Length: 311
Image 1 (spheres, rainbow, N blue to C red):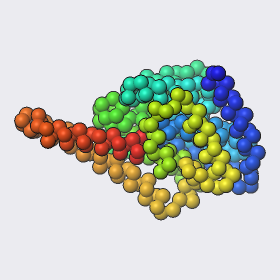
Image 2 (image 1 turned 45 degrees about the vertical axis):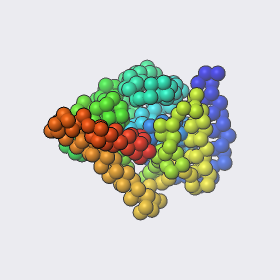
Image 3 (image 1 turned 90 degrees about the vertical axis):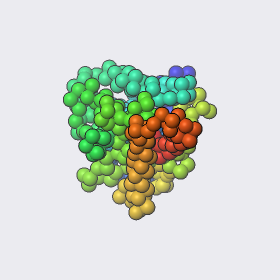
Image 4 (image 1 turned 90 degrees about the horizontal axis):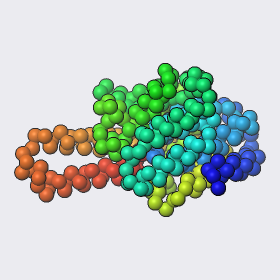
């Protein structure tokens, strides 16, 4: 069966689920915030399909969407109508990762995905759907500031912003930054326009290990169904593993988000300092077992921590 056919079946399943929602408990208009989470973005695809069904049935209206890393891709996909081929490209990325054990194919897959999205309509029409509603966050390592973009000049500018937001230092292509200037936004933009913000947290205690663990999955369907079930729990019971309203967060939730940022910068900076230090050390030191063993350990720590904390 094709991906389109399977998605059509899932959409029918979602239609059967949303009749259980008590509309009186659902805000009429919200913002949505997609967190980063590498392959946990597959769960978010299921959440997005559910939200799209709610919108189509006039149960709520989504005003604006923000995202960083894979969340920026998800946000764009949602605002362009959640076309089924987007899920196909996500599966291609998972397959490439399982085959090659790296993320090097990400850029080419994302560019192909954006091209496919824009084939559905006029470029200006598609940009009109995104401008002022899609907020993409990335980090400028030159100015040391987080930047959020919500207006895109053309398709190339949109693609550039997504690639900036998605660049995980050293893991994506071996480089510390994208074009020597940009890297992952770490945390998505949180709106302050008076509307409830639905935050989709992809790195939870129950799902952090799955951010890079895909070897047992031949397709994305488990993640899609799990995402649908999670957001259905949220709108029918008021609680779920991934979904929450930002205005309901406790101080612990806020601290956890900021600690994640601090931890990422500490590890990233440590790797950078070691690389700089190498240029000043004599060869007998850089060729030693102690030095190279330490480098390998720190690199392994970085890969493990970023995989759990950010990706």
